Length: 327
Image (cartoon, rainbow, N blue to C red; front, side, top):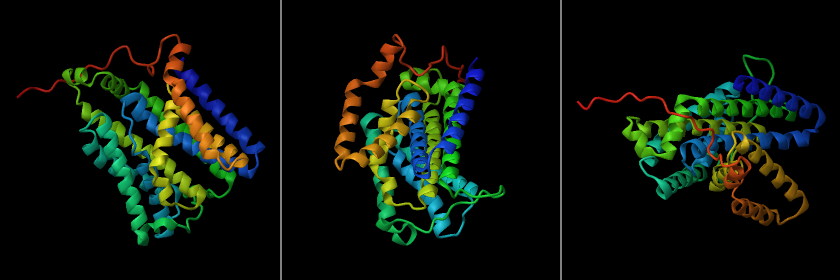
């Protein structure tokens, strides 16, 4: 049954993408592509928050790193292959996430958030000051549409970016679902609920947390790379800590369901777009919406709607660990 629902879900997503691609105009498709990228960013952070209990504020650092990785490749090195760009973004962000995780995951609670926020500020400062490489406050230009070699064509039109962004979001959602349903994901949920108990059972809790931290950073970097390719521009604003806050809010808004953060990310982008068209004070309105969401408390709301089931599909048991010998 789960496999059947997965096939149906992917099929519905494909049909919706085809319909929107053929019905909407170029501008609307561009906004949709941006919204789908935001949905991918939200899903990447959902891995940490929902399943590992790690409310990281470093997501903007990985998101921006992915953008700068493909931007530097294209603008400085003339490398315009999409697959090489995405791979480079994933590797660079993965290494950064590994380094940050080795330090930050030694801490808990507010200290973990402070370290991840400080790391984001460091990467932002590096992008601002290293003008010869990053363009500083002016950002990087000269980023042309990537080619799809060895496949024909390139990502040039709004239709192309929309289609690829939709496919990328579906893949990110599948990755998150696979992690959730795997033994690895079951252990993460156990660590989230009681790290002491899982450590007593023989699990290397920090290794599991580090693994999901790196995977989350890689997925965020892919979203950032797609944003840079679509805008053909990258600047320090992509590394701003506000990006991390917005990603965290999408996770909160979409709490309790697998695809909630994706839909929340899409909705936030469209809400921002509509508010900008109707008022100059759209930030005030958007801030009010965020406050209202916090007061409503989506996890509690989901619990009431589900009749008391809040957790993200927890397993009945976790896999048996392999205990290390004392000697």
